[in-house]
Length: 225
Length: 225
DNA sequence: GGCATGTTTCGATTAGGGTCGAAGGATGAA
DNA sequence: TTCATCCTTCGACCCTAATCGAAACATGCC
Image (tube, rainbow over all chains, first blue to last red; front, top):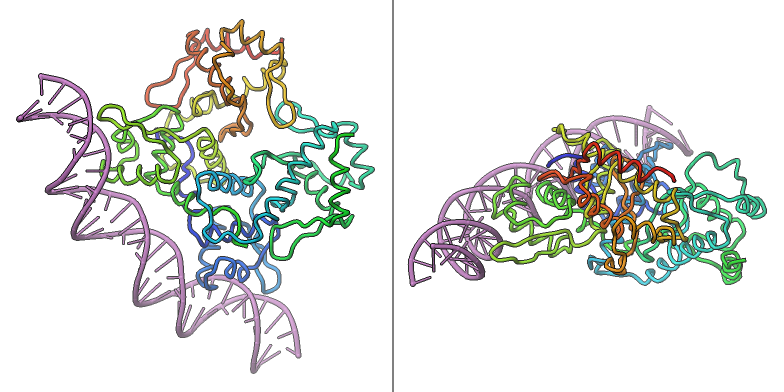
């Protein structure tokens, strides 16, 4: 007993409301300044500063100076995955936010998870790519098939530029209880959707809003060929 | 902002050292009495009682009266999965336990995760079953192949008795960064290993200790046919 | 340099919760 | 019924940590 890593400090770090709000805000994937995070958490700048220092010391976020601002971002996508898993369980055990905003349905439909698409459409994308045999499972990892490489090229994604990042990290939706495509390819696809004008990122939110023609094009994309 | 489930209360619940120790003790999968958990956490019975009440109210554990004892168990395997994920990250971010016991190497080798095998051998089992095409992935879920059904029967597992529980829930090792086989089949296989005398559960610990001949048999089992 | 903006440090206050001693049920055994 | 065991409730203590006001530090702009 008492072996293995100690989870209490890590969980306590996430367990404070102000810090949890900051982390939740950062799942969007973009870096935010200390001031923005303070507002997001509903505390003063001094308080936020102390929280941010602790989060950074705990390895959950990474600071980066830029002029007189300090931008903070999640330290990695596994942090985002952990947070989504926590949301998933919080949802299941009834730890809902008391003040559930009107934005919720849109969030469930499509949202950003770190740098890739999540929500109903995120899962639909994943399923579609598997069904079309663009992606395939090889044991524990996802691979891009030959057919998938053709698809990516035609769709305007430069595979060579993606680097060696894993194609799929497991990332469970809290809304849909399925995993969706994360990793370099997931990020590249979402970017391409933006470029094609199919969807745009809602300001100050994780919501991804598809245009009507964009949604139709997306549905053609994920439909089994 | 401020949408989605609220993770702070849930994380705070796990974030207390006493409660974290209790939860960690329960990953072993067996139910423990309130007194045992108090000893495990290093607190008095009164203190433990209050903690257990809060964990139960939070939906993390489920109490069950049995005579004058009250047995507590994790409320589900997704709780165990979350705890393993927390351990995984705690390991990565250096939140090691200061007093790292001598049992650690054995834990990394093979241990119980709720009701199935985890650690190096757990991952090896998973890989072996995939390689032998006993299991196959269909999109997001694992399925037992035709060949797998034959295998199960020959290995002495009554599939009909397993019920409809999902074959594989994602459960990431904190030691090996891969997923292993959970679910009904995972539990049945581990049970069969016990029955065959290949391995036994170490008392008061998550360690699964294989006998030398048992380990050889296990290795033949997972070797690609 | 002088000023504005963003961030941190210091100090003091306060609230929340973890802790245990003592007493009060509840359950099973004799 | 009486006793022993297990667990919970109550009350009090104490300590951590969250919070903010005030002031200091850092950086960029004019």
